[in-house]
Amino acid sequence: MRHIFLIIFFTGFGFCSFAQTYVSFAPSISNQAGTFPDKINLNLEVGRQWDVFSLGVVVGKNSLAKTAGPDTTTFFELRPNLNVFQQGKFTNTFTAGIGYILNAKENLLTELTYGIEYAFTPQVHFNVYFGQYYYSGRYSDSNSTFFGFSCMYYFSPNHAKPLIQNGKSN
Image (cartoon, rainbow, N blue to C red):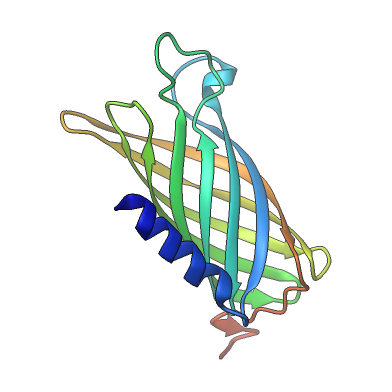
């Protein structure tokens, strides 16, 4: 059943002709306890953007530390994003994601992230972001604050408009 849902989702995701496809690489550092590799997060996102809204599918690791036993750091996430305000080449972004961490006791992942995106060219954008991951399991939960930088590449020039541009609603 899960495979059928994914096929339908990605088929609909791919056939929207007015959307722009992007790929993003996003490393970040968190405030969780541990060594430096424990604090590093890596994400690879592929998605589509429709004007002010984008939706991405993410594969990531919430730690680069070696684990004893099964890997509990790899996650998959569905990440919707909203471009809230734009001034020139800068855009304020808001992201609220939900995902699943493989083999972890706290396997439900939710995310709230805010960022400032800079359109270096119509196809290459850089984003400085900060936010929180919330981890939840059956018997425990925790959270982690993070700060990161992403590089986003659009396969066609991005001309998306935000909800508010130069103080005027769109």
